[in-house]
Every structure is written in C-alpha cells, then in structure tokens.
Amino acid sequence: MTVARTVHREAFSSRTVFILAAIGSAVGLGNIWRYPYVAYSSGGGAFLIPYLVALLTAGIPLLFLDYALGHKFRGSPPLAFRRLSRWTEPFGWVQVLMCLAIATFYACVIAWAASYAWFSLTLAWGDDAEAFFAGTFLQQGEATMFGGLVPTVAIPLVLVWVVNIAIVAIGVERGIGRLNRFLLPLLIALFIGLVIRSLFLPGAMAGLDAFFTPNWAALGDPQVWIAAYGQIFFSLSVAFGAMLTYASHLKRRTNLTASGLVVGFSNSAFEVLAGIGVFAALGFLAAQSGVPVSEAAAGGPGLAFVAFPTLISQMPFGQIFGSLFFLTLVFAGITSLVSILQPPAMAISEKFGISHRAATLSVGTVAAIVSISIFPTTTGLNTLDVVDNWINNVLLVSNTLVMVVVVVWVVRKTPMLARHLNGVGSFKIGGWWTVCLGIVTPLILGWTATQSVITLLRDGYEDLPGALLATFGWGVVGGIVVLAVLMTFVPWRNEDHLAAGVDLDDPREEAEAARVDGPRRDSRSDDGRPHTPSKEDSE
Ligand code: TRP
Image (tube, rainbow, N blue to C red):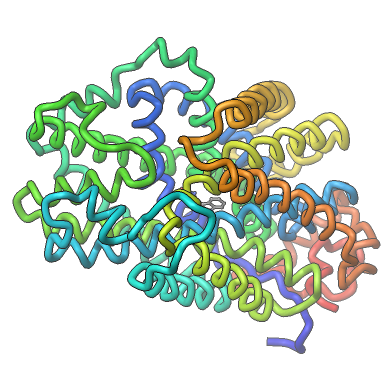
C-alpha cells in the first residue's frame, strides 16, 4: 500500500473481529485432539481440577500479561520485550521459535484430520481403526531418527501449508480476520451438534462418569499437574507470543481485560465440551467391547484418530458424523495455525524491515519444508510426540518461569502494565494479578519445570530411543535457546526508532491514540510524533 520496506501495523477492524480471531487461535486441535488424550492419560477424572486451577492461577493472568505487552508495546514478541526492557528480547525470540516448532507438527495433524474427513465417507479404516491409523495410513515403522516420506500424508500437508501461508500473507484483517469471521460460527455450530449427538450414544453416561469423577489420589501425582499446566498454555495459546501478537493489532482504546475473560472462558468451555463429547464416545466404545472406560482406547496422539473411527463405524449415520467431526477439527486447526505463524512472520518483518508479505512467505516456506520433511514420514508420529512434549512441558514452562520473574521482580513493570490494562477496562486488576504472576505462577512453574526435567532425564520418554529424545527433545529445546540469544544480537533494521525509546507511559499517547483511532484502519497516521509507540510503522 505504500513504498516497499515500510512496515505497517495493520489493525483488526473491530474488537469483535479481534475476539473471534483470539477465540479462533485458542480453540484448536488442543481442545479437540490434545485435551482428551492428555486428560485420558492423566486418569480422566483426575484432570479437571488441576486444569481449572491452572486456568485461574496461570492461564488468565498470563493472558492478561500477553495482552498488556502486545497492546502497550505494539510489536511482535521480540520487539515488545525489547521495548519493555532492552535485554529481555530473547524471551520474545524463544516464543517466536516455539511457535515455529509447533507449527511444523500442528499442520501435520490438520492434514491427518483432512484425510480422515474423507476416509469417513467410506469408513476406509475397516474394522481395526488402530492398525489402520498407525499402519496403513501413517505407515509407522521402527522409532528411528528419520524415516521415509509417506506421500499420502505429505500431499495434504503441502495443501495445509499453502492455505496457511496465503491467509497470513493476505493480512490481519482481510486474511486472519475474515477467515475467523467465517469459520468460527460454523465451527461452534457443528461442534455443539456433534457433542449433543454423542450424549445419546448408549454407554455415554459411563464415559461422563469417568470424566467428571475426581480421582483425589491422582492429585498427588506431579505428572498430572505438569500435564494440566502444559495443556492450559497450549490450549489458550498463552506465553507463546500468539495472543501478544494479536493484541498488538488492536486499536488503541480497547477493553483488554473483558476481551481476555471472554476468550479464556470460551476456550475452556469449548475444551470441557470437547471432553464431554470424547468421553461420551469412549463410554460408548467401552460398552460395545465390555471393558472399563479407562481401557476403551489407546491413549496418546492417536486417540482421536482411533477412538472416533471405531465409534463412527459402529453408530448409525456414522459416515456423516465422522466427516463433520474431522472437518470441525480441520476448521479449528486452521484458525489456530494462522495465529501460530503470525508471530514469527511479524518478528522477521520488524527485525529486518521487510514487508509483512515477504516475511510471511520466507518464514512460512522454511517452516513448511522442515514440517514436510520430518512429520509425514515413517517415524513422524513418535517425533511429533517428542517435539510436542519437550516444547510444552520443558521449554515453554521454563521460558515462562524466567520471563514472569523478570517482568515482575527484576524490571518491575507489572504496575505499569496493570495501569495500561486498567486504562480501558470494565474492572480493575492489580493485587491478585500481581500475586498470581509474581508468586503463584512462578512457584508452580518452577516446580513443574523441575519435575518434568528430572523425570525426563531419569526415565526417558515412552521407551523411545535416547538418540531421538536427544535430537528432537533436548536438541530442539537447546537449539531454540541458542538461536534466541543469537537473534538478539542481530541489529534491528530501524534501530533509531527503537533506540528513541518512545515513552510509552506518556499520557499524551492515550490522547493521541484516541485521536488517531478512527472507525477504520488506525495507528497508521503516525508520522513523526516522537511519543507515538507505533512509530516503527513508517520509515
Ligand atoms: N491454542 C491452540 C489449540 O488449542 C493452539 C495454538 C494456537 C498455539 N496458537 C498457538 C499453540 C501458539 C502454541 C502457540 O489448539
């Protein structure tokens, strides 16, 4: 729209579009595919309580922190952290690189779901859905480092990447905003229909019992708590830079805290609803095969792809139910995948002063190539499990721990951020927020991180070969940390603007914001006002 090399901060056209996009980001495979198997392997009913505790003590407070950082400092994670305090930039790069790592396998699961939407029509899995998933479809062999490419998985994956890159490249409002405005209502309607249907299956109630009956003994198991916190982060997309980035595209005067509560609670409502649907289905399977719910299906990432096909084959009109279920998974996945690619794309665009489109194409292509060469292979399923586990349960937890401690106790910016959140808000946050962020969250994260590292070092992971864990687990985590530090030393293209250290607390900024925020695209008319934070937008 303007001369090349100018980096714009495009804005969502309204708060509704932002909320739709943020819910679209939060509600994804995490809710429908990941939550049920994580809950299932943590003893079903044991999971709900740690999950809710994690939501209230870490999920919501961190969501507010993400919003405050993104909205106040108007940048991708590295830029926002840099503006918070120069030397905190690596936290932002770790977030961006974690997004890239997640995008590589997330896209692959969407590709599986797309294939399954098709397979459902003919019940292609025959009568052994488990053997079909791992064998016939994914062609999994021995757990080695690298396997041969499986074209039937790779081809849909290429399509997923093309769609993803195209939408992010089109832009925040016309690409991401429009996608969510269209898909999210459809997703919600389909999903509610499917959950209601599953409740009428014979045996459903036994499944719900397993889901809702608390297992107090399991609450003493650190693994259950680790899994609950990992799930909350992944599911809410917090502390990954995704929400931070979306908030940076919000108009100046926006009620952030109310939006945060809407997003946080919608996401968990969706997740619990998904749990109800999936456990009702497991109850049905258990009743059909005469086993307890806890043994109705194999756990792990295959759960949705084994339990559902089995169910689909056994229920009346299963083909339609199945197709719609997997389509829902694809829709939920795509609205999240765009939010996973947006932060890295924006970070590269800002750091190197290239256009959003060029940045999206380059970052997206690199991620797509990595994704296509690692996951649709004969060892891909194990690799996926390892990367997912190490990113969520090791790196995310540790990065977030150090980050909150630094923000609250070292640079001491929480009062300033609280003031920003309270600038436009229907309720005031302050005390409890700071206590959660500064004390509760670090204690829990510290404990979780220690436990999870000790357990992984001592016991390995799911009997997988050490070399695989060393490469795709520890190796990926270490690589990200090193790269994050290195990226910090790469100079910013628009050093002058950044170094000007715009006074973001300047009251004039608010007045300016109120003036600039027209009904349409905002924060673009910022030419040469030194106190305007969005000054990096123009060269
Ligand atoms: N929250 C999404 C889900 O539940 C996943 C997701 C979206 C995500 N954006 C993210 C995960 C950013 C990590 C980083 O499926």
